[in-house]
Length: 348
Image (cartoon, rainbow, N blue to C red; front, side, top):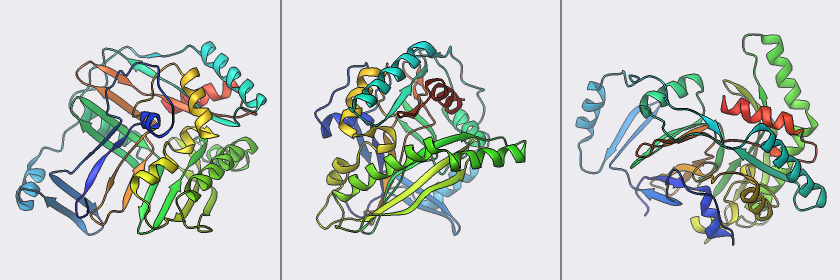
């Protein structure tokens, strides 16, 4: 309802309720397809300081409790567990070659293909690991999300969708290049290489077209525009190519209408969307679940902001199952071995 802060997540598997699709892989993590809740306490940090809103507690008591907590959440070492990847390098390369055959046949022209890294007996202290993750990789759409036995430790650089008044804003990322921070000249060369790469530019353009198409289904005719095309942004480990697409929401459109038109996000699916989601399920070796879904919130005015769940650790504390998938966009010009290297870079 209006007037409340509402937080929660959208799992990638929500696609099965939006389109006539299914998922054949087992669910090792157990996140709900769709989950929203009104939090008991909301703390907002910004330039003005800290604001605390509570349902039953007093803000002053909450503030005192926060300030009396020891700053050291980081006790409890690294993640323990034997990590494996769901398919071998050769199986990955075979799958990418098969997907490129689909592209040549005209079934699709870009598909995001993911590889899962996992452990079945992992042990960790989630706050400590999240603290370390955000030290190593601070990102604008990071999230620590804990729901029962499920944890998401997310260091995402990407926004799925934001609503501000009548405006919808999507910022798809396609295009990744490793940074060389210790060698400034090489770092600059990498940035230029990304900016001028025909392959990365075409990947991004295809998704921009897809997002424009998605938004045009729920926005005022003629209001959808590309505010920034192929912007290059520096993140701690990588350079990313980010585009910004916006539109004015048509009257009478609900959050459900918005999801039906835009979810799952184009950057994690490909084009055309329904076909690539079928192929994804056929060629990937595991269920995505919350990975490549979204986490976010609604504010009391009904505006919202949701990220893309990538560069993330997903963990079930009860079973000890831990997962961190990584993916990349496969196009006609993709070089399978380089795509595999890109997955390894993202996982690292």
